[in-house]
Length: 84
Length: 189
Image 1 (cartoon, chains in turn purple, green):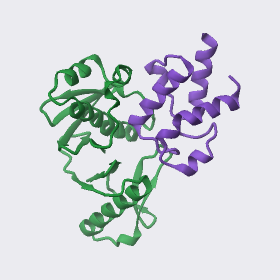
Image 2: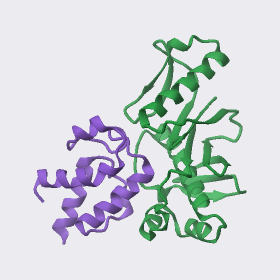
Image 3: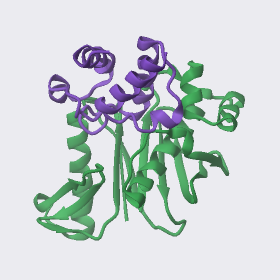
């Protein structure tokens, strides 16, 4: 998927869970879900489930392990979409 | 090293009945403990807070982050005490369960004689909570250590691990802070 389209889609997925508006406004590939957006870890599970639903993919736990940033999420989503 | 975690049982989302949520977070054995327990909501968040508190020690100890709660495996020795294993490590946990919150402190050794407190804050915005928690913690430290409140500050390293400073010097105090919904807690030794 094209980069900007993917970021936009991820941005709408994380929105309900963010606790730092400023960091959310400036969301980029470098944004960290916990450190920057202050998403609590219980909600991080929700983010992952919502990503699975939105892209119709399944993320294994050892892949989820690295999903701490927008960039890492983009890489995983793209590799899953390519493998489809 | 020490880690703590609090869960506000009234504000946390009851998404635990999503089977996929359970599969991502809990081992089969843990899911069994939850499913046979009298209060599933409470048991689920008890196990969760144990994993979170232990994870905070793991990050300090090994300097790396990951997101895979299933790798931190819970064992309960009683309704409020237990331990967590991950790789070759074992962390002891002690929890407090009330109808409103669950609070867990994890430590590397049984012998660590820590000071821990939980309190309620009516305003649940992230920034207010974070500030009030820090202030409460500094008040306690300034009394117990005889240090000026205004000179205390917290610095986080790149992994987000907080360290307590007095002006520019790092204090020999291990600490952990947590907040969720309307509840906050600190622990140190």
